[in-house]
Amino acid sequence: MGLKPLPLNLSGFSCGKENAMNDFLKNLRSSQKERSHGSGRSSQDSYGNPEKRAAYDRRSQQKKSMVQGSEDFFKRAEETLAGIQVLLQGMNETMGRLADARERRADVEEKKLALLEALLPLTLDALKSVVEAPTPAVNSPENGEKKNGLSGVGRDAPVLKKLSGEEKKEIVKNIRTLRKLGHTYDQIAEHLEKNRVPTFSNKGKWHAQTIHRLCRIP
Image 1 (cartoon, rainbow, N blue to C red):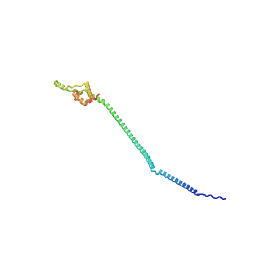
Image 2: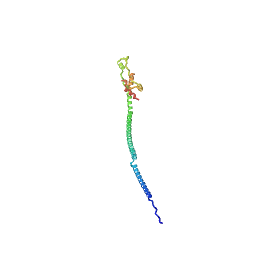
Image 3: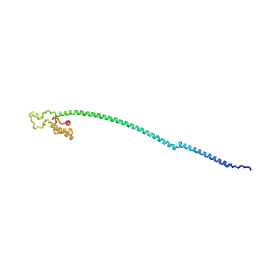
Image 4: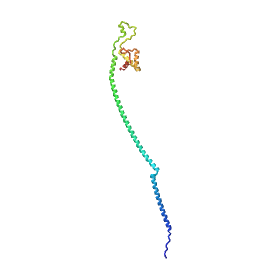
């Protein structure tokens, strides 16, 4: 007895194979789209995103501003230090000139003082010789009347006499006392004239210049 071939239903197999192929192609296209979309988004994120680009630009600008600000600060600081150095140098030169001027002035004052010290004894000796010099005899009205045989009774003529050394010292002492009390040379001379104190030469009147010379005598 011979075998009969089994009837094969290939329609189901063909449909399954076709469905599998369609799914594969669908998945392949999907993956390609995702890769393409991801690549484009990455490129857009890297180069085309306005917000990130603006943020990057701001950071870059801030860095440039900070660098520029630092450079300007150090430049100004350097200029300021240079100005201070010039100012200090000028002050040192000025102080040096002032010190030299003070030293020269001190030398001049010292020379003047030495000259005065050398001349003072000579001046005082000359004043003493003038003050203590004997006064020449003066003919008084009384002496003239006696020579003429006239009496001096009833006359109000002053009698001139030579002052002694003690009397002169007493007058000088009184003059210095008045000077210490604050009287001027003119006031002292007027006081002596008012009290009829005779001058050392028994001539003339008391003057401020004479009082001044007597006050300088040691």
